[in-house]
Every structure is written in C-alpha cells, then in structure tokens.
Length: 183
Image (cartoon, rainbow, N blue to C red; front, side, top):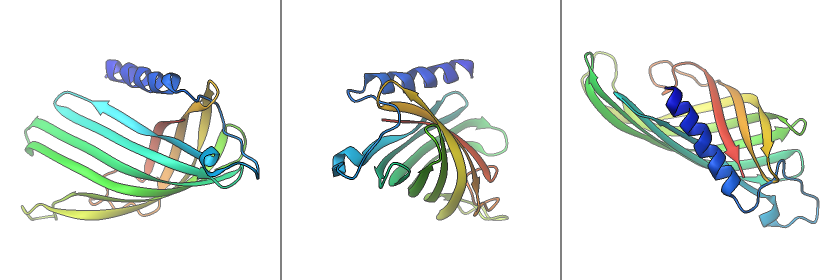
C-alpha cells in the first residue's frame, strides 16, 4: 500500500511538472479571452493486488471571474476482485459525468459543489440478477489548493454527499475525500 501512495504522488507530480504552462492560482480580468479562463485537472488512482481499482476523472473548468468557476468532467473506474470467498471473482466498470462549481475564498481555500451521475452494477437484495443503474450524487464541501510552480497545483477536498443512499451509492459513506491536480 505504501508503494502505491508513493507511486501516485510521484505520478501526479510528474504530470504537474512536465506541463508547459505551470502556475499556481490562475488570475483573470475582464479582458481575458476564453482560453485564458479555461483550466484542466482531475483525479487519478491506482491500486493493484487481489483488489484492483483504476480511476481516471479528468475535468475542464471555466473561470467566470477571479472567485467563481464552473466546469464539467467525466468519470471512469475499473474494479476487479479476485478470490473473494463471499462473492468470488468480480469485475466491473463504472462511468458517468459531473458538473461542478468552485468559489475561491482565498488563494488556497475554496468552497465546492458538484452534481455527479454514474452508471454502475446493482444487485437488489434477495436477488441474483445483476443490472446497471444510474446513481446521482450531490456533493458540498470545500478544499485546499497547494500551488506547484506557476500554473499547477494539488487539491485536497472534503465533501459530503447529500444524496447518499446506502446500497446504491458506490461510496461507503456520505463523506468523500479527494486528492487531485489542476493545470
């Protein structure tokens, strides 16, 4: 597990430092054109072993002004469990999309809200039939932005899912913590 954490930080750091346009918090004014207002980022995760989890969730954001931005993103997760005595081998793909809003309180602190809708496997109680369902989530919370260089940075977010539904949601808890990056 330690190796995975170290690898994840090194991978995200490599992406952030290899970018041509690297800066901390992006600043715009009324004369900024469309491209100057765009930013990119997302989350990436890897875990291997008897439980495999691969996640890629890129985002594109648009700065309305220095404080407020909105954006969209796609979500893809792959899961595989091998040799579980209760469910046997299991493999699935989860996918969907999200809309988000971010309000910068200071250079490092921000408020965040997100609507997410994902498609996942679902097995109703007392049924052996597996079907796919769409599961919505509405997250509210905040985060911390740590700049790296001129245009990139890491984000850490603590969110609460107002639509958490045990048994349907892919998240074990309504509380969700995320690490990501922005370029």
